[in-house]
Length: 339
Image (cartoon, rainbow, N blue to C red; front, side, top):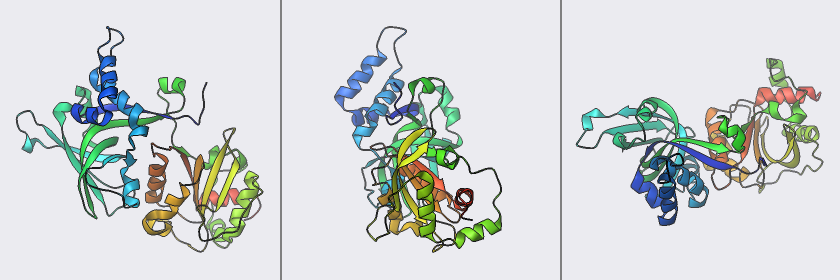
């Protein structure tokens, strides 16, 4: 039976370094993967795909953290196995070809921090299929599992063991048709926001009125809309501004923790605006909630959204996240007669 709270990981490999992945899996898991790849015709799975499936199953237990999360928490170290999911730019480095070695370089600016770049290289002769070469040219969204071999404040170098696509599977039947739900929940998915018209334009007058609305009013209005009766006063050690188990998303109740930013910060929200190393997001995700919500009376920048997405993809405790920026907040409050 489908249970939306049960999530498993699926990996589709483009590149897979056999020895490194076997080292990650350990002898027993690697042997089980090898058994799956040597079964009778009709049941066999090619070795790279069998290893990728075994790696996907083991990921939550291997303690592989998201690279961006480790950077924000200042926990990165040499030799650490990490995962990173974002768009990377790939280039076939033919000028460095040697016997049996056909390097492909990749690089990107970290999607959560414009001051940090990540790069690395792998041997394209280890691509799992000819079609994979076409997938790893130019800029492509991928998931990489690799070892940190060098880093400083602005550069991180990885030695990849796996490059491919990661999916979070909540419903096997839907996954069979190629549908894997996003970790992101949109305000229009919230049942209590059904009366808000998220397609309607928001005027500057609406946004000015929102900026003039105290944060406490916004918090209590949101609580009233979702039916939360217990609203506590802010204090310095709080992990979130509002906690509730009464929010409904497409007919299902979800526990939620909210981080609210009001008119005291009347400008675009950046990661730096959320404390040192984005620690307000770190604290938010320490709450025992299925859905983590960030709300602001102004713009929420892409780096903040990427940081929320990174934390939501933590394999040890995958969650959902929602972003409620100024225009969407105005739409929700307007439906309640506040603006």
